Structure formats: C-alpha cells, structure tokens
Length: 224
Ligand code: C5P
Image (cartoon, rainbow, N blue to C red):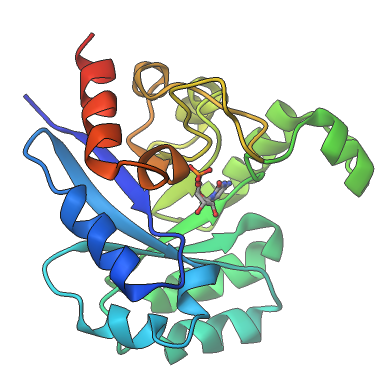
C-alpha cells in the first residue's frame, strides 16, 4: 500500500532541536519530508545546515512574494541548495509565477493560495471581497496557468481544488486535537487524506512536546 506523506515543519532556530525532530520523526509507516521556513532559514546557522542535508525530501517554505525580478533572483541565489519543493505566493502574480517556473528546474514550484491562518473575516479585513473558497479556486486556476507543480491550500478546500488542479496538493493547518494555535482552517490528518490531500504539513502537533509519542498518535489516528 502507498504510504501517506507528511512534511514535518521544522520551525525552530535551534540546530540541535531540528536534528532531534528529524531523528524522532523517522518511521516506517509514513513517507516524511522536512519543511524549513522563514524562521529556520533566517537563523544564523540555518542555511548552512540545509546545504549539508543529504537523502531527505526538502521543502524550502520561503513563500516568495515579490516582483518577478526579485523572486527570480532569489531562486538563483539558492541554486546551491538541494531543494525539492519551494513555495511562492500565487498573489505574486502570473508573470512572477511563470518566470520562476521557467528557471526552477528540478525544484518543484508550489503556489501558496490563501494562508490557513486566514478565514472569511480575515480576508475582509485585508480588503478582499471573495470568500476563502472562491479566492482559493481563483488562485489555483492561476497556478495551473503558470504550470506550477503543486499548490498549498487548506484541506477544507481540497475537494474543490482537485477539480481545478491535477498535480500535487499540500495542506497545512492539520490538527488532531482542538488546540488550533494560530490556524483558522484546520482539518484532522485522516480527514485531510480523505478529502484528497497528497501531502500534509504538520508542525506543532508533532514537534511540541514528546515528538515520538506525537508521531505514534498520528500513526494510530490514521489507522483507526
Ligand atoms: O505548527 P503548524 O502545524 O501550524 O505549522 C504549519 C506550518 O505550515 C508552518 O510552518 C507554516 O508556516 C506553514 N504554512 C501554513 N499555512 C500555509 C502555508 C504554510 O501554516 N498556507
């Protein structure tokens, strides 16, 4: 049977902590990739650590959101790193998406739709008129137009997204308990796979507290 896939969000600035997360999330039941975001990659030793990692699926969650030239230059600046997946906000615009896709080569370019920490009310606050579902659908169509390799959305929207986008769908905002932290659009791991997510991104529910125990809770939850 095909293994369920997760990206563990390695959100820390502490190398020892990151090593512990990598070590303690190793298991035979799930396929695990590692996601490094703004916190780790901007930390003093983060980039250097990433440059030395071998034989792991690496996701650089840079969430590029800038003019085409700056996004492009950033992708060029990280060419020495072996990155399998890289994020860009779809709201960077079609021109930026297309230009980045053209040069990203072996690195899969992931379009970020609407952050899972936002809901309809937050969108209104920012000045968007669309509801989350409508905005995500719109953004995904743009990702398709730019031929991106994957999209990030919440598992709430996966069913709609799957109809519009036939490549990989990656979903953060995963929770196995009622503790949602700063996330607004949360779904349980089991439900997220049932909805059609290809990869789940899981951070705090695994990395806070006893990592091995949390991994086992996840595995048990998925086999229920
Ligand atoms: O700790 P938690 O499971 O909430 O972590 C989710 C991770 O996924 C964080 O690293 C966050 O930056 C990232 N992410 C997200 N929502 C998005 C895109 C990425 O939560 N739309």
